[in-house]
Length: 285
Image 1 (spheres, rainbow, N blue to C red):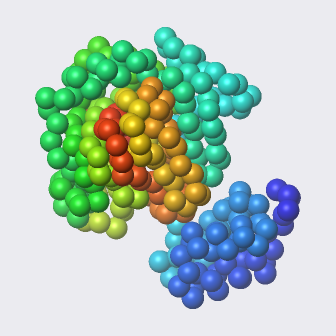
Image 2 (cartoon, rainbow, N blue to C red):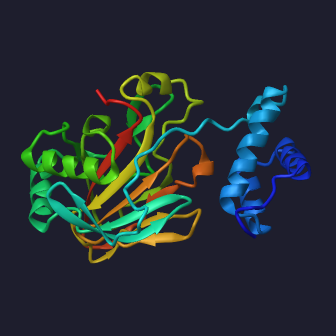
């Protein structure tokens, strides 16, 4: 079916009935796409219908959070290479929904090695953000070791951050500091979302530092012998961890409808080193 599919009164009523029966917005979207609806049309119909229904006094649980601007590489003309300050980066894969782009050669081999060595002495068991309190905690779903650099802490960090800002058209100051993670054999990060859950009591204090996270960039600092891929379960995509490459994904609202669920599969042999950049709505302080 084409993008010209009409959003009829019958369709809107069906969406309300499904949501009122307890179906989540993402389940309704999946059902619509399986029935032949264009995904962009289905998402528009879903968002408009549920928002209007709430405005008319419908249950608040049906409301979708509003979308916001997100980082976006300049891919309108589908160029195979993008210039990022001092380096040409290859576009290896793009996906519109969820928004995913795989880049080749974002970080040079010697830069990867330097990042690993700078991080090695500061590694500790990785923690996850605890949105109930605004703090962080060790979580059994994340079995890596990690550390954070301050933004621009070293010359190599500053180069990589400038490159990312140019590539994704997003200000350097809207990014958190680079995090480096090491995954030993058996270590993994089970599927999760990177945005902060708006329903949790600790989220407002987290958001004061720069607003919501709106995009993630995972850069591979080495190539493990086996395992360690980045997976997106909602769309069946698996990205191989290749030294110097990176996978970018954005999420315009803190909701599963973005289909930004992702994880790191267990490392089966060798180690996996990555550096992750999280991008915020506003200036991160």
